[in-house]
Length: 273
Ligand code: DGL
Image 1 (tube, rainbow, N blue to C red):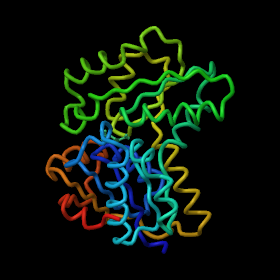
Image 2 (image 1 turned 135 degrees about the horizontal axis):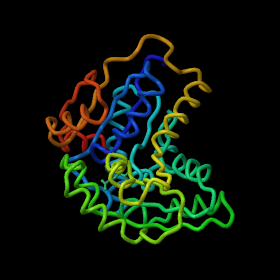
Image 3 (image 1 turned 180 degrees about the horizontal axis):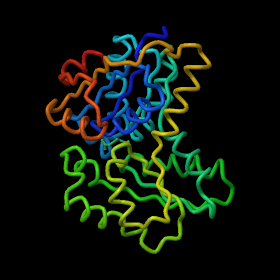
């Protein structure tokens, strides 16, 4: 089992922010990734639909022999974590628990901001988990519906991104929070612009870093960590445009040792139920 890949899924390129941290911490592990850009964004969809898509992708990855699944999407974590943990006989983790823990260990004044998609923010999942673990916490949650498409279109370093960030994050301008959770895996690609807008004193939480540590500890616990050679056969599937996906992946991961393949939505649908 040690040689089997780790699977990650997202609605598009966002989960690459988690892939980057997993690759950094666990260089021997082979990664199989599915980014469902053809059906992006997941954020405004009913959670029942996001669950259906997540099940399809999870089953597809299981058919590729993965030994552990990371739901590298906050919206899909809300929609499908419990179901997939019950259905699959491999370990399945999401990103919200890690984001919560990282935020709690960062905050000094217990004032925490959370940004995410409409689906994640409406579920109140971060707020529930933070309040459950940190007494007296004050959480301000804001949905940022325009961020994901800027990232998917590879415009996350453009002037437009600055404009959109300043519009969507304006509710935080007078906030005295000391920590902000990037509660959508697409958002770390906008991290520098967000930091410039809200100031350097604010701690930004990228849950991917904590997720990678969680993956490591599960692999060690179950004695399925790959102790062999550095992995170099990573495969990234996208239901969208593979050229655009490849460009973003190279730019974000700063490496080339992966293959990008197209997978049609019709193909993923065969893995439903
Ligand atoms: N990257 C995803 C998340 O973490 C979803 C983005 C979207 O498709 O709306 O929530």
